[in-house]
Figure 1: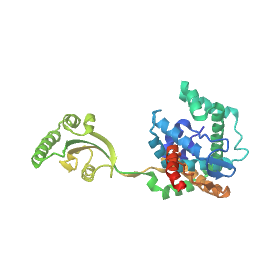
Figure 2 (figure 1 turned 30 degrees about the horizontal axis):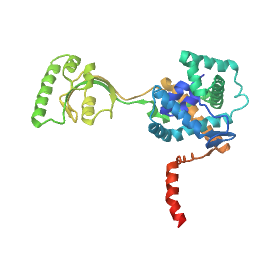
Figure 3 (figure 1 turned 90 degrees about the vertical axis):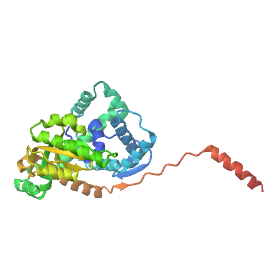
Figure 4 (figure 1 turned 135 degrees about the horizontal axis):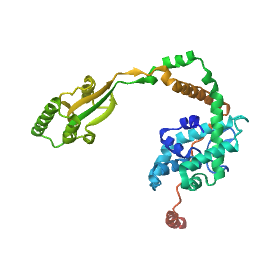
Length: 348
């Protein structure tokens, strides 16, 4: 099964969830608060909360999550998850008879992939997320239908002329641009909150001594391991590639002013004294169209599909309702106290 449309709908938080469970389990009975209606389909508050709970449990590795934290996440993610339920329902409501024609072999193929992924934990996975394998198969069928709808609606994009792709490429240059990048290492003599002018002067002297060593050919990585106060010292001071805006301004300005192989003078930032060596310097560039053609086609498909979804949303008269506030449990002791206090007044 392709990961396409359904996977691209979801937020970063829930990408993790669906990368594991892939499917969304919905109530079959009319029970609980309805928080959305899409055609003949109803979306229930409890299903959304269950989806969020499942995500959090999987992300925490099965560890117990404090109830207060769980409620905070439910509140934070309720609306975006409800929107994903709505989108799925819109697609299913718009599916044709041909879209719904899913074979047993297609479903079994996905089941086998899941069994391979979860191994001996497969039964536990099914029970915790779907109760029964039949429920899981039903959800697999729904997601295969979604893929069919997406492929049907966007199929024409694969046949678009080169000019159309080129037009998209030319008008979306930023999406295909790679920023100027520098690969650098550094040696840091760190400032401390307790530093005095005298201690800073001593640190500057130390930095200058190290600078002379590396400028005269001492191995930079070895010197960083022996002298740098940065955690990167373990890797010989290696900071990897970074772009403008990733580092503090004085450090960035110095690094991007260097050519490959050059070493800076002492650079002062709020963190301390730095000695920077640049190992690579890549200029900004735009990826050639041929190398991003697949992305262009995918982007155009999503663009067109989003437009189709908006049209279907209007046709299906999607209704969204806010969840009903929960009634706090009644405290019987308080009731009894109130009655005791009220009774003398009544006697009067």
